[in-house]
Length: 324
Image: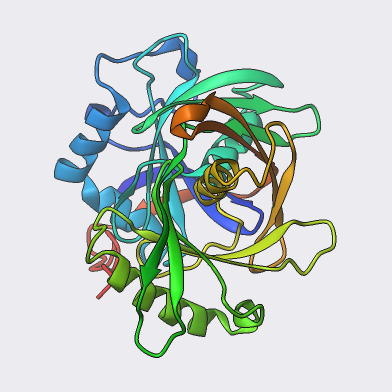
């Protein structure tokens, strides 16, 4: 019998399942009773991710796939940081594989660390496989994530998708690769989630013919709330849509807005999700000549479960059901 301790949270409606104990020592799990800052490793978090991918991927499948998880679940494994001055390192994953960075997940991890008594209000550094991110826990439990440098690489790429009007896509990096499209009809985002998933998958198939690194699609339209600047629908790898406004997607959006001079530094952009939740976002220039920004995303997560997960040796689905 294998057992794990996981903490479930949601950030603006999007779930994060953080593993805090029970994985093999080779992965360097920080343990449920030790402070991550007391531990370090010579391995980078990217190297730890490869160890998990090659030798322990069944742990990913067990925790985010059915029958325990779902397509929308994002997992986070806390491991020792390479730099002992940092709080922890984190590996993000979902139903089909691993993520470079996850904005909502980072906020969920910080709330989990606060819940466990491992983080007090203030600033700390988390290591991710795409680089370190600064996180700030506020007194009111909101979290600000100072994300990795973000930038646009392609502006208004024409797209021809059968059955759809002419589209133009921006390709941008915000910790993951995104295809960002302004909806040609403001009523697009009034469609059902199932319709938007299917439409986004068709768009993604065309985009990946020339940009195979892209694995997220982000559709934008007018907000429902008068307090927000834009509303988005985000297709994630694996076919689920993001219930939150998507932290890395919002970072990519800020990079496009900054490059187009539609948003000034340190000006709040409030991004609304498909379900009506929101993130507050802003940026500073890192290299204006090259269009590289430092985005910041602020929101709050809520812990909603503290679980002991059991994997019974006689259970044929103990290690998850892989998506077809």
